[in-house]
Structures are given as structure tokens and as C-alpha cells.
Image 1: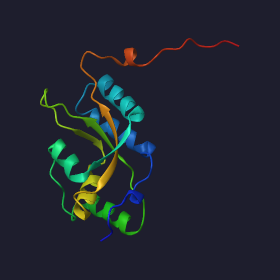
Image 2: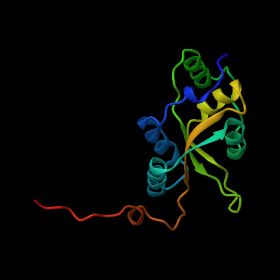
Image 3: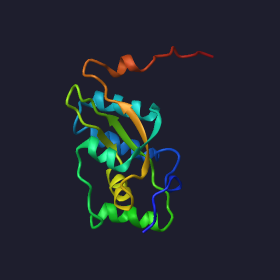
Image 4: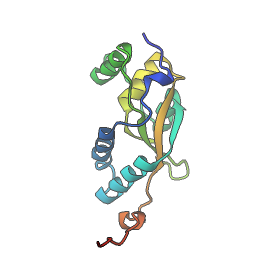
Length: 146
């Protein structure tokens, strides 16, 4: 099996990953909050975290190689295809909130199977607080006239 190295990952997340994150987050959050979370993910810093730490912080179990989505990611790695970095919303121990993997769970699991200490590139952002609104987060610029 191939080792997971930095070269196994693209430098930035695939644009489609943000749509997948929005779909998933809309199941957990009100629509406006999910939208704000995705906006934060688009602008969040790229960091590297170990596969085992991402799984532990999220509270999710690692999936087996037989899982169809994990198997596809393992096949991609074997063929030398690059994986897209994952999208994560930071957890908060004070609030009892775990890390939310907004997109990339199967990529993390595939990497974990190959090397649990593999560094995985992540776009990491803070979960919006309930009192925050999308309108307040987006700076409104006056339209320019010609």
C-alpha cells in the first residue's frame, strides 16, 4: 500500500468540496449558519493535522478498507492521484462540541489506514456562534456606478 505523504494531497480543497460541506452542515445547522460556516471554511487557514488526531477530535470511528468510499480513496492513492484537503470546523471543549469534519471523512479514514500519524492538510475554521448572522459577517460594499 502507498504511504501517505504531503505529495498525496492537492494544495487547496476542490471547489466541489465546499458544496458537499454545505449539504452536510445544512443537516446540523440552520441554513444561514451553515452558509456562514462554509464561508469561513473558504477563508480559513490551511493547517496540517494527524489522521488519528482528526478522528479522535471528531469522535468518529475509522472506517475499514472495505467501505466503498474509503476503498475508492485508497485506489486513488495507489494510482498516484492526489486527494483534496479536508474541511473541518473546530471543536470546543468548553461547549462540549467535537471537531466537525464538514467534508473529507473518507479521505481521513483512507489515510489513517495507511499511516495513522499521517499529516493531513485541512482547511480549519471556527463554528459560527448562534448569535452571529451572515449579514454581519459579509461586508456590504456600495455598488459602483459608471
